Length: 323
Image 1 (cartoon, rainbow, N blue to C red):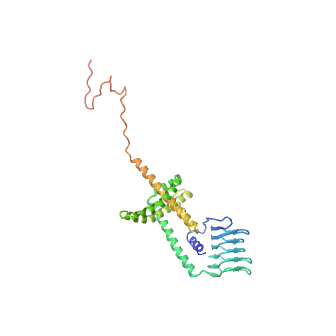
Image 2: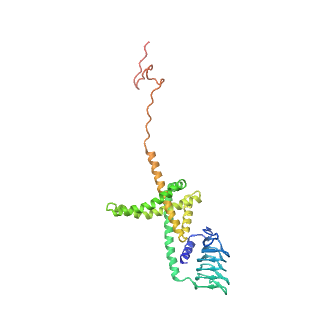
Image 3: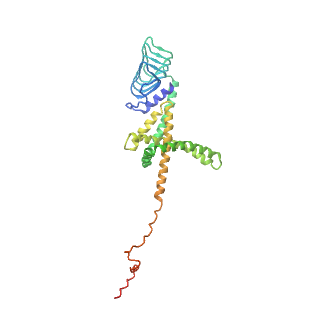
């Protein structure tokens, strides 16, 4: 429950109130419902995993196997929640047949518990321990997000053509970019460790391992820029902002967010290396000297050869013909 609560508070610091990106709003047996801005209904004969909502009301008539966490919205429970129920800016209302297997926690409005409803845990406000964990998580997540934002904006300002190049590479060579990214992600750390074992390669190995972290960050913002270009056509900076917001929102999903971040980094690595190799091969081809054209043999009307007098060199008077 703490992990879901931390993710919700982080979402509140990033997403505007009107943003709507539903990650899993469809019904399903045991599926998590992770919604940014939309109401959620777990109807009778339905089973859900965790219910995680930023902005929207939640109605539980069926069964929730995990937790119900809502940042801004009311929660109405007429079924069963096996985990905890957490509300930040709304009110939780439990009907007569409601069953909560965990705690009933709230931040502002005290829950309304109808006679007959059962809460196995405690009904309480958030304590200091949860607040401290949320504060640490917010600080770390914001630091990473702001660092990526500044890095991406600097790259776009200093090298605007590079943004166009990586976008073109991602569109034309997505498959090779994925393969190159996987290879680079595996080979570069191994190469750095192997270099550190040898005395001569120790400085190179340490430098390579230290360079991996900024390289991974650049790869991540590269994927954000490419993703934004697929959504917004036009200016590179707004597209990058949209792509970064989407990736950082997806990063808040437990387990899945980490996998998405890893895939974004790998894809960005591949796009960077494929773009770099393509640029170097193109510049090498343009730098090759052109082969001079071979002289052609004079034709019959060129003024030389048998039957034609030799032309005098420049500056030498031509001899007068004899009669």
